[in-house]
Image (cartoon, rainbow, N blue to C red; front, side, top):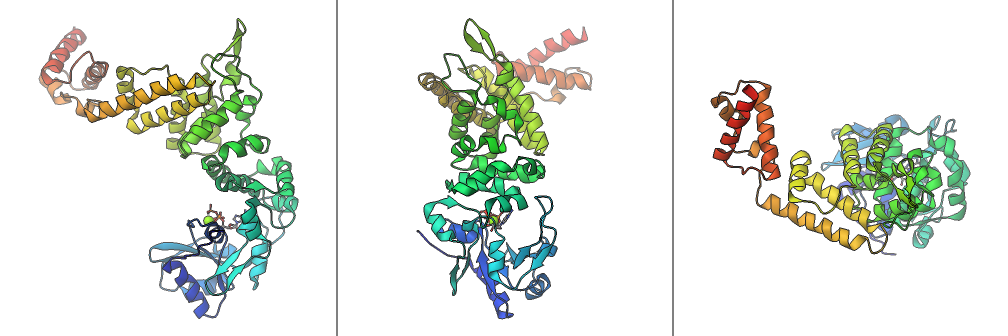
Length: 449
Ligand code: ATP
Ligand code: MG
């Protein structure tokens, strides 16, 4: 394995300070896993024998953030970086599959490792003492396998979030799930439904953005469908059309695969056809899905609201889903209207989604449409390069000019500017001051009688 431990100096300092005060301290969890995989860890978590107050005292004078002191975690800012330092812990009895009833601190590193979820996450490493791996995490890493520490049923029963973490790591790392662990995943539908929306949202988003998302979604759809019931009808929904050779769900997985790995696009890909099952009807032996994009957008809206996405993120995904089935090719006029209304980033994302969508159709259908999407992309580039007028701000006349023409102050000013912009976007008027003033005069005359 391409083992490469290179903790940054600020992370080393956390260890050193604790040890100089006479405590044990180890790097644990994700940073050990990622280093053994030869990847760069996102954060360097530390586990220590020091009690939270003792940890706080070791870093007196430095900025500290309360990251759940009563659960043993003190977060310290070292060289501008946040390091989470957690006292060795054994979790107490579990009552509701979510929260340990009590936290008990322990003087033993092994106790702390045994409460961790998967063997690959239950290792500790120290620059001089090396690796501590009581559950065979390293071997599981080399087999690329996720295995619960201890009895999977018990561990998932203690905390149902681990079910989603398992699928998320399978997707991010491209690991398979060990047999008993994999079997147990299916038994926690009830407890999964009691998890907080935020935690479900975070885990599912990481899952969706993982490299292996399509495979994990395919294999474990039944595990997470209870959380996303809007998706289930897509399974087995056949598409008897000349464009599709897959069920709606299988097509969706292809689109997820082809979509760039950003939360917005992956969620939009997952949801873009969720309105097809209720929209389906037959005519002359061919299936039709008229109006499905609108139904998909409604489903996306309620699903994302339930998972408490921010309004901004929700609107972004929903608007892409609503727009995904636009006719191709795009005219310059239509692209300009979209650019004006939604901005270049959104239009880029729409084209990404449409490209992914068309790669997931019947072989033979895709290439022509992909070329049309590519053509739209170069048109967008050209429009932006030419700095065509796309907004009221760029329009060659302003509100003041209309007042000078005798327009009464008030809503009419905005209305006329809007009409002028629309005509510029449509190409029926150049963004030229004289031409705009002339049209404004005639619009004003009509309005004022
Ligand atoms: P990432 O790189 O995504 O941060 P990570 O493994 O560091 O992955 P975290 O959520 O930061 O994941 O958790 C840090 C460590 O804490 C994990 O590696 C694991 O050892 C432990 N852990 C986190 N959540 C749980 C849980 N629900 N049950 C048991 N152990 C957990
Ligand atoms: Mg982490």
